[in-house]
Length: 135
Image (cartoon, rainbow, N blue to C red; front, side, top):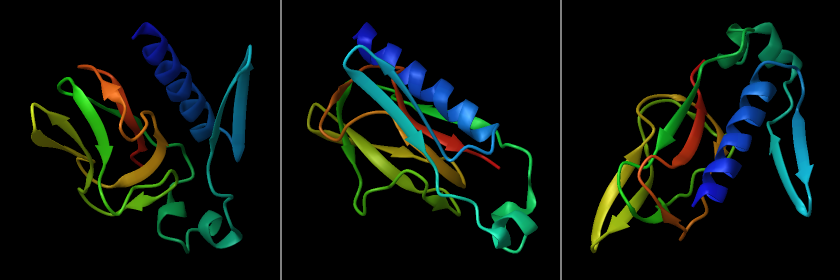
């Protein structure tokens, strides 16, 4: 699955670039493939600090949540969405392996920058699943 790792690396780099700039959307095209990463536009209230999370104008740390085993990736319900703010630890997904459901947690609060795997996709050990901004 080197192609999957390559795509996940490109998504991670785009998310890091997006977090370090004022851009709202960034995309790259290679051949017939397009990868696009976007975030909600910042409003005046969030930039002034009234929005709680807008108090920190510097970009946060981007953490990658990776698969810790081989199996089938499934999003939890309600399904997490890119751009969603997590206030605390939450189960984002699970990996089904040998009929056992193994949860994937956010490991704290933050904003979901990207979901790097598709629901129902086979995943390998160490494969990126989520990118979170830990501002």
